[in-house]
Amino acid sequence: MQIGVDAIASWAAARPEVTEDFARDAQAHSKFWRAGGDMLGALPAKPKRNPEQARAAETILRTGRETREAFLREHAKHVYSALTDRHKKFVRAEPLVYEAANLVPGLTPTRDQVAAQAECLQSEKDGIEVDQGIFFAHVMAHEKAGAHLCHAMLLPKPESLAHLPELAAKGAIDFGTAAIERRGKASLVTLKNPRYLNAEDESTLANVETAVDLAILDPLTQIALLRGDTVENPKYAGQHVFCTGINLTHLYRGKISYLWYVTREMGFVNKFYRGLARPDADPDEMAGGTIEKPWVAGVEAFAIGGGCQYLLTMDYVVAAADAYMTLPARKEGIIPGAANMRMPRFTGDRIARQAIMSGRRLDCDTPEGRMICDEIVPPGGMDAALDRVAADLVDSGVVSAASNRRAFRVAEEPLDMFRRYMAVYAREQAYCHFSPALISNLERHWNAQERKI
Image 1 (cartoon, rainbow, N blue to C red):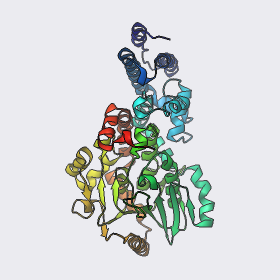
Image 2 (spheres, one colour):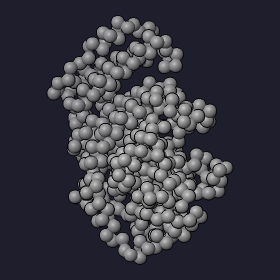
Image 3 (tube, rainbow, N blue to C red):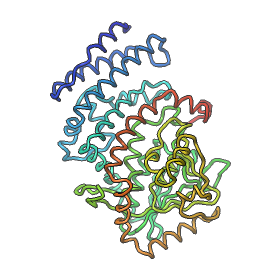
Image 4 (cartoon, one colour):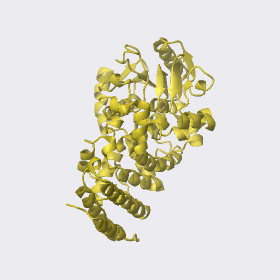
């Protein structure tokens, strides 16, 4: 089936108007978006398009995004209210955005559509998941809906609650790419992706969040520890490394979904910082409705990208003297989570911009590194250091830990500030994730085309 330029122009010119009538607008826009989706599907796959077909696809995608922005600007609150039974039920980000595709067909891609694109290299995708970013941006921009979604993402996962009896009986659970174990009065969460230097990817996301939930929920511990496992890479074989951030090989190969970013940032990374929410209490700092423990990180070798972002949520950071931190987002072409909001509180604006925009490396055992790291220990001394820090914190009493954490947050990053940040992050990260610049950056700085999964 051939799609003519005139047909696409006629379709684009017939975009529906946005009114105050949600039902009528949903019906009209759904028909429009599905027609655009049919035209896009009639084109050859992205790598096989000629210049005219590439321009046609660009027109379809751009027009669809413009009309989704307009529709959601008026109706995001109605969509979210319908999906959550007027805010009576909590729905996590992933099912929420796919239920939106059922409620208003064409508003966001379906699971099948995203699954089909997942088989492509990142450079060969049309970026239909950008529509998910537009959806989340407008939900988060709405004060009531955004706060409710933040609450949903801070609740313990049902899977985590199901594992509590096992943790109580065994004192340890290995989930494959993450593990939790009880060490005295501390819960130790270990990051485990040894082939990729403990990188973050789709295989780690759910397991790390489950381990984090359990660390906070365990009634027999008072603090939580975070550390990277030993790895396989010949350069570091048998050594602990903290985390090398997002798995760039998987990113280049199209194996990281857009939803990964939203689920990660609003899920376990935010749980490091805010603890767990209760279903019957607002997690806003002024309401005090959270379950919290102080977090201590042990940094060995490096904390790159996402690993460095973790440190900005910790209450105490112990680092080996030869370890370093980087936020190489510029070389990757993405936004480094919430680091743009959090890092300036530690280092000041200039150093934060140098780290994020120019790739500045911060060695832990330097004046700049000590702005993030609380304590420097000799290489090989992390086990003893973490045991000592944990004992000191427990001995001095952690009863006031949750109170002090909330007091810091309400002054530095209240939940509403995080919501507003995520409204920007959701949209901008979607466009970054599907930008041609991301591919060229990975090929230039990572030699990604030569690396195998």
